[in-house]
Amino acid sequence: MTTAIMDKVEEAGAASDHLITVTVRVRRFNPEVSADVVWQDFQLPMDPKERVLDALHKIKWEQDGTLTFRRSCAHGICGSDAMRINGKNRLACKTLIKDLNPAKPITVEPIKGLTVLKDLVVDMDPFFQAYRDVMPFLVTTGNEPTRERLQSAEDRERFDDTTKCILCAACTSSCPVFWNDGQYFGPAAIVNAHRFIFDSRDEAGSQRLEILNDRDGVWRCRTTFNCTDACPRGIEVTKAIQEVKRALITRRY
Image (tube, rainbow, N blue to C red; front, side, top):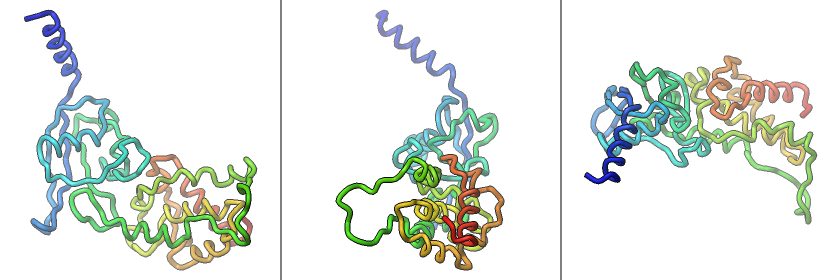
């Protein structure tokens, strides 16, 4: 055996030394097969620094190709792989195995409050409909400007936090009010309304406030802070909701 080959064998051995065996317990549901939900365990050799998304990839690519889940960018930007991991809403692509006590089974299930279509995939249509209902776009009147709409750093800072939303639904699907009443707009929709209500360039703040003044709007919030805890982007969701409530009362924004 040549020295080069021996070096490669040694490198492969060293690379496998730090792997641990992890049990990933996945909530499975396939309406084409059965109406019943089952939990299925998968044993995987994993680097503790790998992510839950890596574990799901290994399951799908090496053990069970029928496992169904959403993911896109895999870098915490698209928000498509939000799911409940060990009972808490997280992004699978941002959750490291080592942070989950891998000595015990890691449970993975779909986010709550939305209809499960298959395995870890839920129907996002109600979530995005609430998002569309709050008019998540800049509204202005008059002629189209000939130059950019200028805004001071102070005015921008007023709503900077809520621009970070990636529409992963982690906050909305962690809300107990949303679990019990799917008509509630939910934290994510309110956050995206906040982003434009407090934008000094926008002229539809009053209209959005009236939308959120509805019985299914901000007054349904019970301030449990679940949404803030669940947000993978660190947005102060509960604070934003309270600011919208205050704007409704004072009409100052």
